[in-house]
Image 1 (cartoon, rainbow, N blue to C red):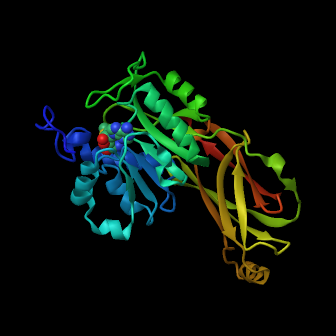
Image 2 (image 1 turned 45 degrees about the horizontal axis):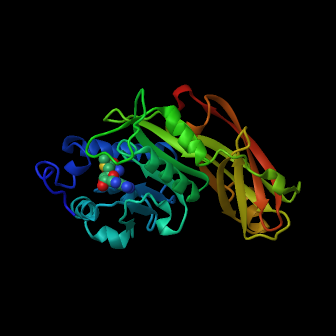
Image 3 (image 1 turned 180 degrees about the horizontal axis):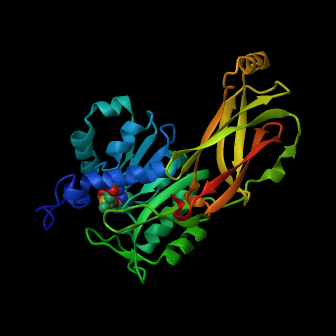
Length: 334
Ligand SMILES: C[S@@+](CC[C@H](N)C(=O)[O-])C[C@H]1O[C@@H](n2cnc3c(N)ncnc32)[C@H](O)[C@@H]1O
């Protein structure tokens, strides 16, 4: 349903419904840059909560590989107009984004987990009971390395009403949002990133240590290492390396990167290649077939951060240490 009076004047287009028209482009760029600064790659999945007229979606949908973008939005007309005006109908075939139209903060509606959840200018209008519901629902669709990136207006006192406020805005104290995150089983961290309207960014993530105790150490089972680390993007380190299964049992090895607090900083898989192929590549000075992961530094304290890598055989419940690297996290986590 398009908005009815009193909003008809100046509040009825896909652009002005979600904010000031003259910053529509900047808010798109800000959201996209915030996600890329948290490590978003085109292979990741993204849930855009309150995706509106695809202000962020107009950049994220083309960037991501097909079937990686998911939007939830109560106002169907906004998505339809945003698609028509920003992207065109072909994107539905080429990128196959999926949408759900509801306002119940149920992030499980697609029946899957996500690498990233974006909630841009949602908590700046939401009541605490809605935020609590949203965080609890987010927790259920987040894995150990998933991130929720959200924005809010930081204030001296938190909004105590129980209804969504729109187009007006509400404020929260960061400690109140952090407490809601903890109640949902998530950690809250401010994320220093620009916002054209003066909102503050934060990330929610799973802070639980990786359960290494569930895995039997099997020295020598795998061979492998870091081949390198580099700045992939401001705020994102790219790590890569290789691994081979000395027992020759797996087609694919699971690789996990653990930080100094024991949290799972990244997880990926690497395909196994025949040892004779690996030997030939080594002999010829070629790169070994390997793995690569992006590590967002926003979750780390500034300073040197040691990371350890393990290769896993999840079925045999065994792990093997394959190498360590230290990344330097600059102050201001940029
Ligand atoms: C300020 S706009 C932000 C839109 C979009 N995130 C962006 O940055 O362009 C707020 C959006 O939240 C949507 N919204 C309202 N109630 C919602 C709810 N319960 N769950 C999810 N989104 C909601 C509105 O329809 C609107 O599109």
